[in-house]
Image 1 (cartoon, rainbow, N blue to C red):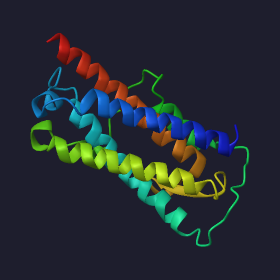
Image 2: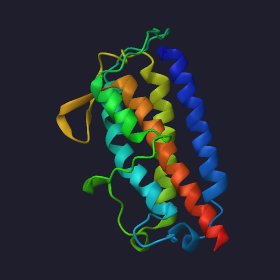
Image 3: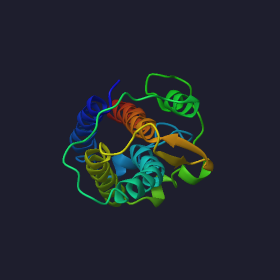
Image 4: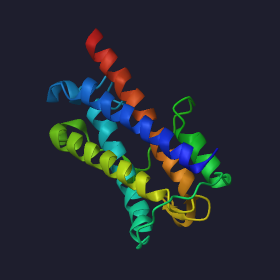
Amino acid sequence: MQKLETALDLQTRLTAVLKTVEQEFAPLTDEQLRWKPAPERWSIIECLQHLNLAERFYIRNIQHKVDKLGLVQTQPTDQPIHSDWVGKAILFAVDPQVKIKLPAPGMIRPRPASELVPADVMSQFLDLQTLLRSLLDKAVYLDWNTDKVMTLLGNWLKIRLGDAFRMLLAHTERHIKQALRVKAELIKE
């Protein structure tokens, strides 16, 4: 898999996520966004807030890498993308097709839906995804195999930039699908 092709694919998937959120979730009322199919399950707004908490961390770290670019370059360099064991493990853990449920670490577990302001959560989500789109455009000038960012597990465990971008989109798609399942159950109610 090549960097430039992957970046384009990620942009396309990100556009689809934004379109889904605007079409499926933006028209819902605050009450619908907070509705939970069961006490132990997340509402739509909790899914989005979880994404905000997790992705803000990674996006900030990626932004630091992009900000260090300095000089404006005119031609991005392409390269094959390679994953190490850290990237493979994290990508597996967040893959939307994998049915394994892992508990969210405390720092990225959303507050109860009743404490969240849906308009604020949606706005933050859209802002973060828009920033991610911008960072993807600029990050094609970085080396996606040697440049790494810190993981939520700490500075001692880093993930390659290419894996970080792929993980962010897979994680987002996983929880957007979860939120869509909640919406489907809400409509049946």
